[in-house]
Figure 1: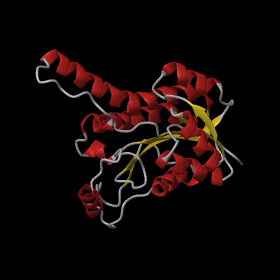
Figure 2: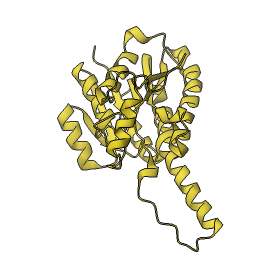
Figure 3: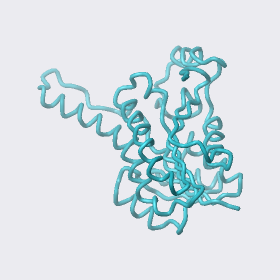
Length: 247
């Protein structure tokens, strides 16, 4: 039976791969993104419906929710990314403490909005539509375990919130889990700032000596939404080739 799936931030990379995996199952998939042209290209390529939406904007998320059907089987909170990679104004030599702190606050709030607030708003907006047997899957990062600055802190907060969410929606038969990727090639995460040496170091840190791929995350998301994962909830699933291990 076809499911209704919503994936935020799915114009490319991991989100697009997840959308393609669910579409391949015959599911009805809605993807979101902020860039209309890029979003519509991705939607047409994978066979999904594209809805322009900034997942950190309450008004846009409310409009997105209003346009969905009565039931939702799978929500993937993929919107986000490290906003510290975006161009920042250069510090003037005479910048005072207040100005520097304002910039620091804005930088941290940007990552919290993009990664934590976006997931919280979207999930709460569609919570009443989540059907028994459904799944909420949020995308984290290995950086949450490795002192990743404001980005890592925001993703660590996603994991903490997920534990709360799992307890809230679990009695309804809905699971909530976080997938925490390591280095994933073929995405725009590093904004073309990844040096070859840094890439080699990231791969060398894995046990299987290869970069992750968007399909690795897509297959994990597909499993977490499957009948075989109905007793897995409140968890962080690390997909990083052994670069970070748990026990």
